[in-house]
Image 1 (cartoon, rainbow, N blue to C red):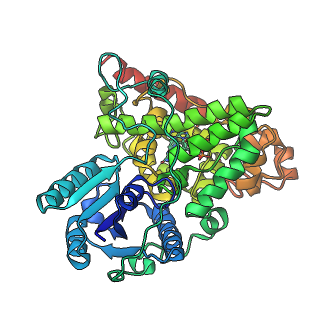
Image 2 (cartoon, helix red, strand yellow; image 1 turned 180 degrees about the horizontal axis):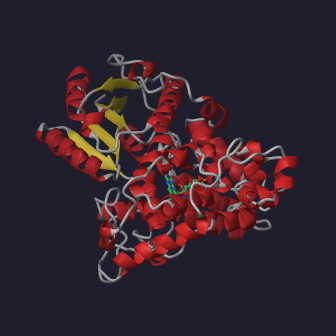
Length: 480
Ligand SMILES: Cc1cc2nc3c(=O)[nH]c(=O)nc-3n(C[C@H](O)[C@H](O)[C@H](O)COP(=O)(O)OP(=O)(O)OC[C@H]3O[C@@H](n4cnc5c(N)ncnc54)[C@H](O)[C@@H]3O)c2cc1C
């Protein structure tokens, strides 16, 4: 029986896995491989939280493969060198993998494919990470999209994504498998253990992904429309890291949602449509990145290259990162991020707007902190999110829209539950004072045992004045 290497990357699952399915379908014995690349060749090597996730996701993937008497062969090095070495060791004649869409990875994979084909190897890449390949969605005048709604309509016009495949078995080659490293050898876990909160919050791996999707469809979908903007509730799916690491395919999430919608029930149709559109935003992010390779570093709207950012951050960035800005909703979000590796979407917008507009610090600084601390850090979605916040991106918030974190708390955390959870030093204050403790009178503060500047910082900027300064700064680039 001929042998194929299936090169696993950001697709750590066995269900609905096109390369694995194709290899098994073609009658190959499969050697499942994971190659850990050195950071130097990747302009965006995974941050600390992503590395944490990857460690456990690889372990779960290996356990799954072992359950079907196979193995994940883990190696370290340059992918082309490692693949050639493994081809020699196993006598395999094919290498199959699922595509990724980060600009540097596309370039690298193209080189790998060409080199392997020149060696006479059947090297092939497959879809599976997205519902629609980014180059398939084109506007009437054959241009890539810059706005979400027409993009999503164009996706829908391509038809429903196909039904997901089931679980493919990766049969063990008769002659056994080549040696590999232990996942622990990759050194992905932090040396100083800061990861308690991540361990409490998440179950990386395919089984964890399936459980998260089922729980959301059972309990969350019917209320998604009403609850998705309320950070104190578990109103969203929390599938983002699972989708990022490919522990579940978007096609699986899409099909399961459709199925749940067909079963009916109050709120399920509107919740379902909204949720599918969120998967659409993920597609849109990849589409924009694919067509704009500099999207993670450079503003899509070139005017913003001249934006007068603050020169000297004077400790403001550090206060933002640490959740010590003195603005409770911002601090709650930043602390949730630090503790759990995740932050609610609404709060991502609030803390982003605060960094870019009230503190007038470059969006790339926020992007890079999120990159290091989010378990779902994803080049496409993170760039889209930050350029949206900054007003420089595709379908972005207009620059003059400055989120007011106090009004946002009033609307989306009316009882102050979210703030109390993450900023417990303010929990004894009534909800109104919890949102803006600097406005509370001395008696209210004293009763709650809060002394500003001692128990909780005073605001590091004045919200009103910094908003005006941001708008003035915007005038400087508006007519360029
Ligand atoms: C500044 C900023 C940075 C962000 N960085 C990331 C990131 O690095 N990785 C990431 O996955 N998302 C990012 N997002 C988008 C969004 O906040 C998260 O996808 C969402 O909060 C994940 O939670 P969930 O899985 O419960 O979402 P749900 O509401 O359950 O949505 C389902 C899925 O749809 C996708 N999705 C939802 N909203 C968006 C969106 N706005 N853009 C792209 N995809 C979306 C995600 O894959 C998500 O898992 C960012 C948003 C902002 C404003």
